[in-house]
Length: 79
Image (cartoon, rainbow, N blue to C red):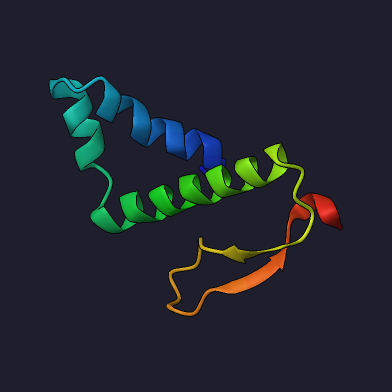
């Protein structure tokens, strides 16, 4: 089953915010690599939210890539 980005972020966040035995098991089901990828996704969403809040319409550095070389592109709403 494919899950959306916000759903994945919520599935990782909630067990960490409310740690108990059941939630620790949920977190352990995700590999470290998956947790890092979800964290990068959350930070990318955060970056875009801040840029939208300040009405930015130009290029920004895309930080979601695991590639050491970041790249830039226009914010999605500028197109």
